[in-house]
Image (cartoon, rainbow, N blue to C red):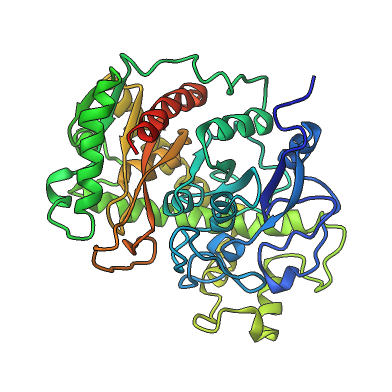
Length: 435
């Protein structure tokens, strides 16, 4: 009995260790570095008969090399381009995996995500990206940012391919390929896009119109019950905001939340990078932890992006106390507690099966950030591409450059990965029918 991936060529992100090729995370300091072992998800792929044909370029160190390095840039790989538009707007750190999937360089690819790094490039490059429930897929053998928030996930050209990949790389015995197991008819979907204010923006009006047309048209035609309202604000402002009580509005919560997340990631990266590098069989540069990595970059100016040669993020990570920092555990606990309280309240109060949203500007929806922190499964489904008539506006993580994609983003409840995939497949089918 052959698996669904037997003989299938796969490309994986260059932070996933393999026994037979270098793992560099795009950094000059790790050029030629050999782990000598397979990450758990690489082992699962090979056990299922998949052929790992190469590694994809990535945002160097998943964005931790420096704050202003362009998305998708690394010292070893250069700049990933958007497969749709050819522009330098490929999305975040798994941009190489998304580009490879979009171009058909392999049947399927694997990315990793701490915050937006699977969903963002999948959206920009019009492919399907899936962030699984936290803990469903092993992080073992992956060069980390955060041991708490990192997760690998598939990026492919269809929901069906994503399901096949997830079935193999996930823990346990899952039947994700049975995409008819759950019907979207009768399911309750909460929408979180602030349509009125977004329609005033020339950069996002076409996205909002496309989104609302689908949600209040085709989604309802599928028999889905659409619950409309500013569900995040309603639940957030009515909750006990003990941790962020100084914030008086919904918008004010996002910044301190992300600052806490940044600090937690910094602490975990400081210890995590040294732990995994200590297991490598060979690192020609001699780098073995964060301190030696910073020193290498200082001694080799060509290791840094010429536009931002400061190592600002790495230096800030080094300045923490790592997992022993007295603020690490309190910050982590309040992140997890606060985000889970809000997202679970959103789902339970309206008896929702999933949330549906999109990205219409440089700021990602707060619900996505909260769901990510809480470990909820998320999938992006291509909805359209920015038209050639749109005005050009670019931000760090958003552009409406002609040809760059935008997507529906579905968020499910923890453990509902299979159900979310089934809903996504039915949505994908109706989108393709109407193209």
